[in-house]
Image 1: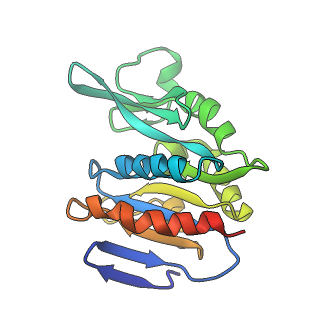
Image 2: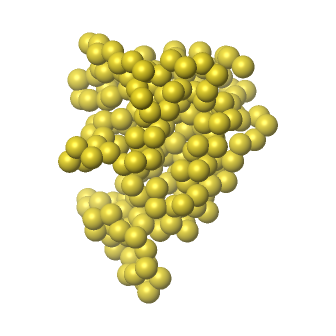
Length: 209
C-alpha cells in the first residue's frame, strides 16, 4: 500500500511514512529521460559533501558501435565494468542466455561484478543501484540482495523503470510498496530541478542513525 502521494510543480512524489524500516529513494521515468544522469549527479555531490561516507553500488550504461546501441554494461562506483547484455554476441554459451528484445543478458557477468557490491559492510553508508529492471532481475540473487539492504536500514537510492503497457514488474511493485520508499517520477520538464529535491532528503537520511 502506498501511504501518500503529492503532485508538485517539480514532479510527483509518493512517500511511505512508516518509521523504523529501510529508507529507500526510487527514481522512475521513461527510458532516456535521464535517470542515470540524475543518480550520478547526486553521487558526485555526495562524494564532495560527505567524503568519509562509504558509497557502494553500480550504474548501467549503453554500449554503442558506429552510433548504434549494441548492448549495456554495468559499472561500479569505482569504475569497474562488466557486460550486462549484448545484441552482437553469438557464442554457444550465449544461446542459453535470457533475452530482452534483441539483447541477450549475461547473468554470470552481471552477478560477478554487482553481487559483491551489494554486500553489506560495517562502514557502508549508502547503496546506489541503477537499475532494478527486467535485465538485472534475471539474476535470482539480485533482488534478495536488494531486500537485504532494505532490512539493514542502510539508505538505498535506486532507479526503476516505468510500467510497460500499464504492467509493472512484480519486484518493482514490491519496492514501490515498501513502507520506507519515496518515489520521484522524472520527466523532461522536471529533470533539471529534481536533484535539488532528492539530494537534501538523501543527505538527511545519511545523518540519521
